[in-house]
Length: 347
Ligand SMILES: C[S@@+](CC[C@H](N)C(=O)[O-])C[C@H]1O[C@@H](n2cnc3c(N)ncnc32)[C@H](O)[C@@H]1O
Image (tube, rainbow, N blue to C red; front, side):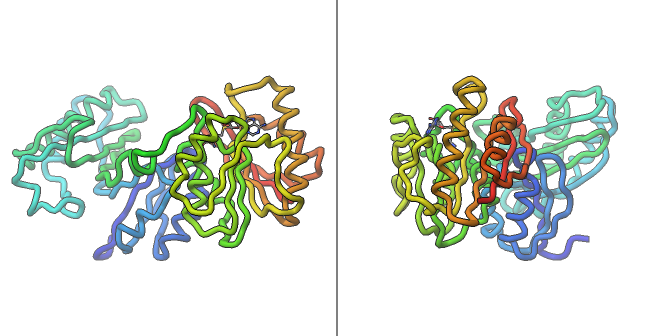
């Protein structure tokens, strides 16, 4: 049973980040109860104001869970879905006194996995027809133009219907930020930052900062010193523009193989290392990682910690071995056809 004023949320994220995000949910939303974790999705309940729930920054999208019901696998079963949507109770997510008798454009995005004989478009059509029988003045909008958005996910014969609270400006932090070609999505950068357990007095560095996504996410929490650097002049300029409004954040053009930082001065490093198709063959990557790690050994404080992301696993492990560093895999991600891993290094 759901208690009064308790809301069940569904959050979506990059698959592989679930454990880190469960930690963020539990830390930021004191009464949160995790209901279910699926690949790329976490369901949780809370009575806290929506504003608190929106403080989660590693999730891509936030929805309110409306209902779970069964749907058969064949096209003929879509008539039953239509009937269910005709009577579905959406009063806990929509103020019906405002919307039920108005011309409202809405959208239902659907997904399906399993052996159904219908497509996700058939699902959206049937569900939308049912909803319009409940609210005859409503009409189907376009992806660019709609007032209300729902999501219907069917896995085998189980359907989950949710109401969407956030749009793409949530995960891209508005419309102002510019992203370099190899830029991380801010939500992924945030998960890496969160996993480093930000401390208010620490010196935090991203030595391969690209367009500055990681340092910009780090700036949501208090810090001692915050620095990012990149070898590319163009990309460094983008990082400067992206972070111009953040006080005391320093962006520099530098070579991570010769970091211009003092010995034993850095508490945390979080970085998305060069990997994938961006650059360099295997030997060059190994050489880059080797020289960079030598610098890290020099600049990190005792007990310092680095969270590094790369799909060049062998090269990174060879290098950490060489310097006798503890190195643990924290997460395995699926990103743009690659499978980078997140590592934690203890100094
Ligand atoms: C994977 S990208 C980082 C992207 C960044 N996290 C973002 O969201 O924009 C790697 C970056 O490393 C930089 N890079 C490559 N070799 C470098 C070096 N020797 N020193 C510093 N930066 C370097 C590249 O210019 C690139 O911007």
